[in-house]
Image (cartoon, rainbow over all chains, first blue to last red):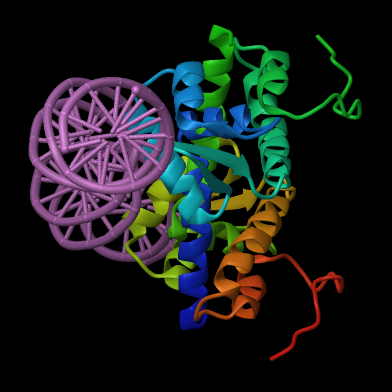
Length: 125
Length: 125
DNA sequence: TTACTATATCGCTACATAGCGATAAAATCA
DNA sequence: TGATTTTATCGCTATGTAGCGATATAGTAA
């Protein structure tokens, strides 16, 4: 393995770590249907404004969201909706895990997965 | 948003965090083409045996890999190859980022993306 | 200018964990 | 039985960062 591969691995790991924080997932989920400014997100998601702003900066630095300034407000939006495919794949995995536990998978899919793609799996149980 | 959604978000975040460490990505990459035991992985990937074992336990606890015991050896394998689709999607994203920087994207794709699916992109260099 | 609003940044604490060496636990072999 | 091998766990340090309140920065309005 070459040297560059290690750097690539680090970049990929850093990208994944952007999705490894619940608040950031909630932010991405809130931006699913359009841009929001920091105040709206803070009110909608809870937590301090400083925290939301910092997470937005993190997501923007990695390139998942983009920033648009209007007056004193900062509006953020999803850059590439394909990131939600990530959530889909993970939800299937996580859903299979949670299936054997207490939490229902449906609530999970409803909250994170995009639409009713139908092809999910027969809801046996 | 309901209570369950927070738990789901946490589960998804925890799942992503499993991929947010370079060593774990290297482990998954090493398991791509078949199962390996701890000693083989330690020799191949470097680092201490304790560290490799701990990462394997983490990945197994989340359900990404499975363990098979033979004698004193413990062989680990990928449970669901679809996890590499995750890497694909991330590699595209990260590749687009690195494209504008020093690191070449090709090395990244070579190391993390699955096989020569052909459709990847002309290897201009 | 001052006052107000919205966002970003600073300073800080608390917590999680990656990494290591040492050791325990378990299976195999002499 | 003891010795060896392989893996898992323990104890520990160092580092990263999520979260908060306070403050700085920047734009708007008077």
